[in-house]
Image (cartoon, rainbow, N blue to C red):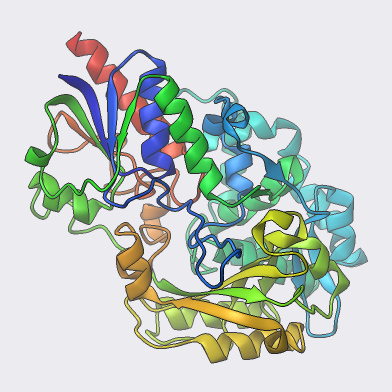
Length: 470
């Protein structure tokens, strides 16, 4: 009998399996698709030789993850690549605000009136970042805080809505960049704890940057898989699990799936019926005949580029997708251009480019033209560089990854108490009604992102149970 079966070979499922295998437990992973990866895959979506990331592409939380940093993933081929700038946010006048490794460079891009306010915002937390991120990503309490004072101080700043934090700034440049950071998790700007979301992304950039993985995001999943196999773990692909009886006997079952799928497979009925999913996204992967022709010079030097003319436009786009049930006329967009630092991703002289915008859950329209008109405002001539494109709306994204219910790439709405307490209002979110069944997906704390911490935290609950049984 196995100690643990893990269902789903995404970053969280693989991390949970690795953590258990490192502690001497026998583990097998079962993945429905023909390759591992989940939210960290790389595929030729457009033309031969163009390597695209269908899901996540840039990894500020990955390089800062306490779970990943404790594993020898570099030994198994993972290499982080950094551009000169972590992120840029261009404006229609040809200038840009930036998120750089340097706090001073970032603050200077906001203008003299807000430079000091930004430095004061990040100064208390950056020297204690490693401890803070470990404590923050272990909530609810899967481990005692190492620095409860800094964590409490962070909570005082982070728990209010981001619209409150934005009042620290006089001008809209800083407010716009910060609004874009919050929008990475598709959260309304006025939502609970959205200040914490934006601040975590900013601090992550200053601490270790916003890198891409050399060769594509698939290398993260491949490194985890290779390490797991060296530890004696097994990985089965093309193995769809429809009910618990499809799995071999084990002392624990760990699901890197949506709560909806877990309830169906394990027979939990309506146990997760109150769990809310967020808006979806419409994503376009491009093969380009050269770099994106950004007007702002800073955008040409960054792997991640946020698109939104000002904070009001970003707010309207979020409200349209999450509350009004319509696609925005001028969408907020997150774009990634890995070719700035990774020449392996496309033939010489060419580029891959990744862009998505928020749309209502399950939306079935085509946002390509709207997105490209928005891009042309900041990169005139963009369409002339397009060699091929691959589009995916909510239905296509959900078909590729069953965890993306309705096209929600965060596997759950980041609103209300569900920001921190997900998938149930519980201090033990990784356990379920069945004592041998656990959940470790992005639907559990600390939530969305390729960081493995949901798997890491869930593994703690699993090995405690396995130790008790032994």
